[in-house]
Length: 477
Image (cartoon, rainbow, N blue to C red):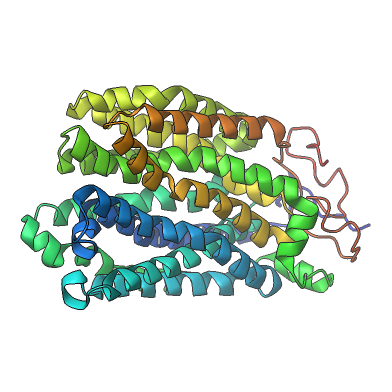
């Protein structure tokens, strides 16, 4: 049995073979992951903002205002339908060929689709082809994002020291709030244009700016190296012909738990970041500027909070941090809408701040390390991607469902608050069921064993090697 070296207090070598000289490479990989996910989510969210503020008029002008908004949110949801497919395809590629190559492709595909949306003629110019092409491009966006997150967090977590995985793994998670900061900032600027200019050309600017960001992201990702886990999977002869089948066959419970945990974080997030922009302005008479500025403040705060929660998960464990945040999210659901209902700027911003910087950040930060630690190296990209993106399908339809429910309830917020609270409770239950994974070993062993290699999250390593710093051996069942 081969033993992976554990941390040596005298030399500072990492638990999984990282030495002080490799810290620059670790930071470079984490930075590339963070910037890449920031760009991907910027592209993804500007579509959501445009769907809430512009697309109903630009691409569905023959609908009533409510129906047009619902149709625009429907195109937003199409991206989430595509995400599991992207997770399967890019996960297959990433587990068999390598994480780096898959991530270069996801970033390019997302950027190309986003730029073309910015060039797409409206309904008045090309008729029904406008919404058809819009839906197609949204599908490509979702397909690319489906492969992005799992690859980015897998690569960063596999490259990180055993006792810092929660912190480093949370850096790609910062891409969500940072992407929201960028998209909200750009849309806040273009929203100051007169309505005629905004509808004519202003909404296209955020999409076209993506071409610059994509160039930066591709350059950074071209400078990172493949992880040791991929090389060891190949050397051990463990590359799976169909990683997705292996993941579902041997890790179905882990996938189900990751779906539930994503839903608990994703549902409140998309209610706040997408649905509230439309609901607040149309039903509560809160100005568009107040909502976008509040979103910007909350997203900046979340960007700062995410690595803090990630570091806490290294100290306290993934489960306690996630469970605490999920419980807080459940309690916050109804007060969030009560604060919004005041129609005042301060309470509105406070509601957004609590939802994003505390509830969402606390759940989202530890999931990068937790998801990666639940799956062995030969199906890790696929397992994390599929679980995350299946949860995204549920969360992605929330703005559409929320719009329909609010219309049926004459603008009342209680149906949406109930969905929020229920999703948070689902995540809380999942956090209580999932095993604590902090400190488990991520590297595959040297010998192939088809009956066991995909059945345990820590394959063929000694329990001594899997011991976290200063803690007991995590439950490997």
